[in-house]
Length: 194
Image (cartoon, rainbow, N blue to C red; front, side, top):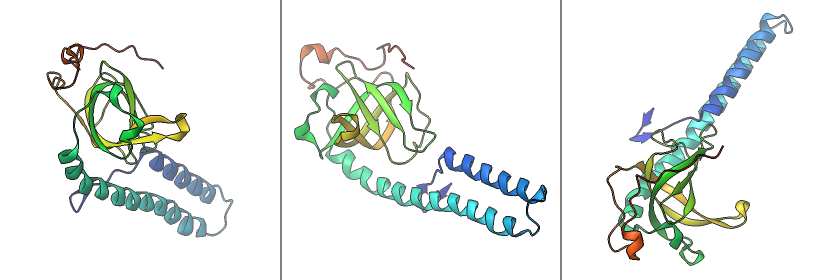
């Protein structure tokens, strides 16, 4: 749903939990375990409040991402993943690559592993993706370099903007080495590890 120009997406896990609680309250009421309909008067609205709270949180974060995206797009440069360093922490960057794995989409906090021919990195977001991304897709992520301490200090990109890109988009000619100039993002075949 769109509110004030911002796409609000409630994670699927929230809907699943809402459904489970709604069914639980309904079964409890119909089974006669509760003599008054108070379980429905209080239980269903409280379960619905969880969905509303998730929507408010998502709207707040999504509006911040929408506000920050133009700033990040204008100040970021496309760089190879292998050149991401700790000195770049907090700086805006743009990376492209082939998606190896997407996880966390059910919880609304996607974590995408991408490979650009030079190295792999993790692109993560705090809100659901605006388009469906799967293994094998070519994506471009604009965001900030961060150090994820839960993954032994691995360098990651907090993706403010994540979009699919065309298979014909090449890495820029001024990338660096002659070897990297020949890298084309799309034909790289990635073996899926599950």
